Length: 168
Image 1 (cartoon, rainbow, N blue to C red):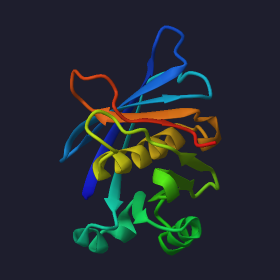
Image 2: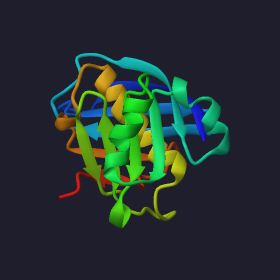
Image 3: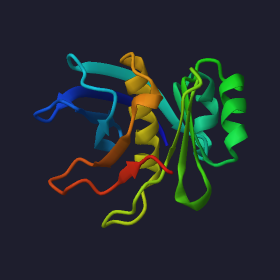
Image 4: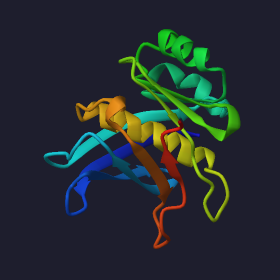
């Protein structure tokens, strides 16, 4: 999947300890929720190119991508991808046991454990959306170390279906 993602981060909740995200792409709208690091002072919009390297069409755009998802890959491969693609700020990969690895060019890293929702495990588009949420969080001046939970789900009236607490 190759997508230009437009992500809008906005304070959410009464205590504003959560940040709501809406990710717009050709695949549709995905919503997300991040928690950690305190509130955002105001809304923030981030546009970037996100690619799933398993997609054959991604090869021609990979050197322009801000977010790259490698599919199943060893943790060491994320750093190699960031070195090979100097414009890429965030790389993600599917880890062992259903985890999702996130590595930022800044050195920040996360290990997330997505929970299956009513429709099953997170789709490739939702996994790519989590990388986009991390990119936008960084672009807003935050660090990955501040994130305590991430949720990505289809933008419908349904409750969130893909919770991603930090893996222990």
